[in-house]
Amino acid sequence: MCLAVPAQIISLDGTLAVAEMSGVKKQIDVTLTPEVVPGDWVVVHVGYALQRIDPLKAQETLAAMRTAGNLGSDAMAAS
View (cartoon, rainbow, N blue to C red):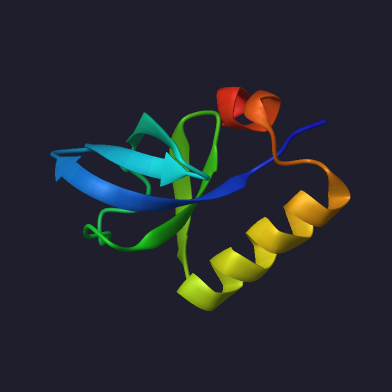
């Protein structure tokens, strides 16, 4: 199963960013979302930010994933 996870952009360096996903910081590629700035929320899949999302939507999605039991270390490693 594929899973895209909301993450918050912490810092940018060209087309790479550090993003935080439920306390886990990971380097991601933001080539597909050149408009992002630190503080923005994005949806991440296989290391790529696919789109920018509303912060409220990100929090709602994270809460739903926690409730469903899909937000653990395995989800973070795959994103």
